[in-house]
Image 1 (cartoon, rainbow, N blue to C red):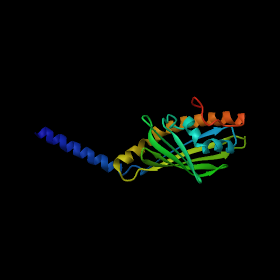
Image 2 (cartoon, rainbow, N blue to C red; image 1 turned 45 degrees about the vertical axis):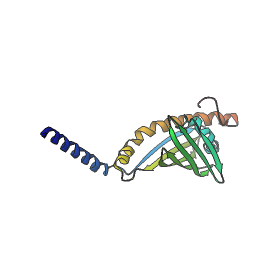
Image 3 (tube, rainbow, N blue to C red; image 1 turned 90 degrees about the vertical axis):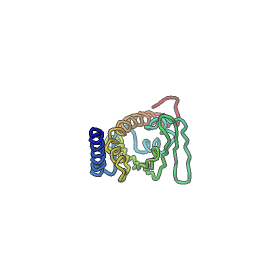
Image 4 (tube, one colour; image 1 turned 90 degrees about the horizontal axis):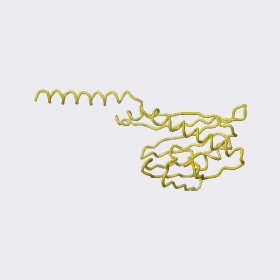
Length: 184
């Protein structure tokens, strides 16, 4: 019985320590990545503002049942599927020369996102994608926030690479097809 008691004490101590440490962890997470696209900011914005193109280049490109709706002043993309779960993107502000701001719902987790673009002297556009969410005081949420940059970061890099390809292909052709049979 002493062995079980010692195990129970150790487990209780370990759980208490894990909860205590969680309050020292960040209460939010942020992932920020950049890419240089050989196109004008308006060309980048044209692709980003068209939510129907997101299924081709975004991390949620495996969307099974994606639906885009446009309301007065805002656009919404919703999806659901066995691999990506359900979620939504709601555009909250857009400036063709400067950026696109959106709210993202990832399986019930609210995330703020922004694409900021700036033209460089060589005619290319630097695009910075930032995602940020609050973890709150939930110990599990804080541990998840700690690892978000490692789990979300690579997805964002891959998505920016597909976005770059999509914009650069369309910029020279004079138009942007909304949907394609394959990924960009």
